[in-house]
Amino acid sequence: MTSLELEKMLYDCQIGMYLNDIKLLENGMLVYSNFVEDSSWNFLTGYQLQTIEEFKKFYDKALTEFKNINRQPCFAYAPSVKLSDEVLEYIKTNFSEYERNTVLLCSDFEKKFNLSEDFSFKQIDNIKDKDLFIKTFIYSKTHTLKNDTYKKLPEYYFKALESSFNHNGEWEFIHFLSMYKNEPIGMLSCCVKGKYAGLYGGGTFAEYRNKGVFTNLLNYVSNTLKKQGVRYFFGYTKKFSNNEKYYNKLGWKEKFEFALYK
Image (cartoon, rainbow, N blue to C red):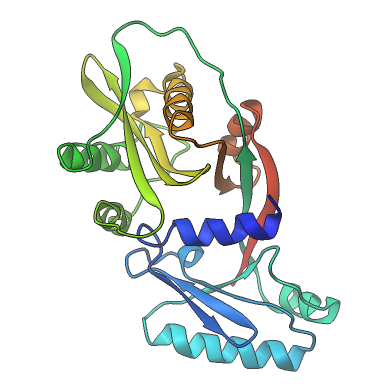
């Protein structure tokens, strides 16, 4: 898989979860969310821009489009963005880097810890267990311990998650839970299409971290989805973060960087 193919897949699979749509413009496109207000989920990206004048024209038109949906976007720099050195230098000089992410790809991750029989994992029924999954996600993303490195997520993320249960697109949304004594302690969402699966929104309750729970959940998800024909797993996280180091240790390799400029 090329970086360009993976980049397109990264956008497409999130339509119906965090993203609402992709709007094509001349020399670029807009990517936006009706739920999540963060600039990392509302961005514009342009390609084949060779002069500063071309970039300014594209950028001004894109900003006008975003104002109509009350969003302040970032400019995304990814493999599809083919800019001249002049335009790239202009962006780096006149914009600040807002966020830098790494897009990771993996075909096999079988690491597993020996946990007691009190721990278990399951794929949920999207109708029966919907409310339980959402409650687990919210608690995991809002309940932190002192000196926790994980930040709380704003409420609009939870609305985006809930919308994924009603998704009817090409990608199937599948959700998993980590359990301790039959009570949920963590979760993971996946977007699945053919032999590819994107992993999103994973987490473990703060008091159960650093015990191997999430690694075993990944192992369970991998084995479950492989039986359904999945062969490649992808996702992204912040560059130079603890999450990146964690996934690298499990065999995930960076395919490309995704930089955002504001």
